[in-house]
Length: 216
Ligand SMILES: Nc1nc2c(ncn2[C@@H]2O[C@H](COP(=O)(O)OP(=O)(O)OP(=O)(O)O)[C@@H](O)[C@H]2O)c(=O)[nH]1
Image (tube, rainbow, N blue to C red; front, side, top):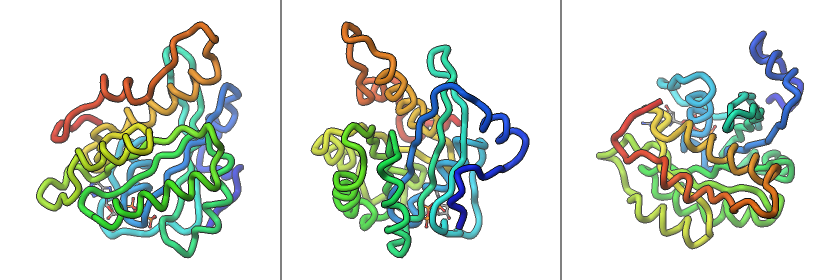
């Protein structure tokens, strides 16, 4: 387990560490096996971790600097362990998170049913103004799918959170999910009272790709 925020991963990571512009903490949460690590690796490295599934132990993070409408912002992305036995560790990190990407697996009903419990945890431990996005991952698994897109949309609407389906395997909507939260966080910081309010849901609806379309 590595819980040291000054963890060093290599030269590129050191350069990112030295970045002194705005930095936002984004946390990936959801049941074990829904694809949190794969989503992060896809976003960070543009690759898919296939092969045997190695569960995250505790919590770890990767940094990425992204360009939001001409301004560079750093996303510090925390990858948490979905397994119940690590829950007390991950809970301790909620309060620092500016945004939460809450994942379920469209081919795993239990992971979807548990979303309400995850939202309960968020309500209890996260900051009140945390940006939340619900992600139905593994959208590429068309024949194994048990959760329809409309089910995800309905749940997201019920809790008033943004929603989209993603695939860490194909890359579908992965950049969009991270960029939407980056944009929302940046707008929150820089918005003048007279500026129109930024809506992640509207932004995502404009930008999102349909299932089956595979851009990374
Ligand atoms: N087909 C498909 N498989 C995926 C996708 N994302 C992840 N997987 C697979 O699902 C398994 C679990 O992925 P992880 O990213 O390790 O899951 P996790 O949510 O980080 O799991 P924990 O660390 O235990 O919390 C791996 O075998 C991945 O290859 C996806 O979008 N599509």
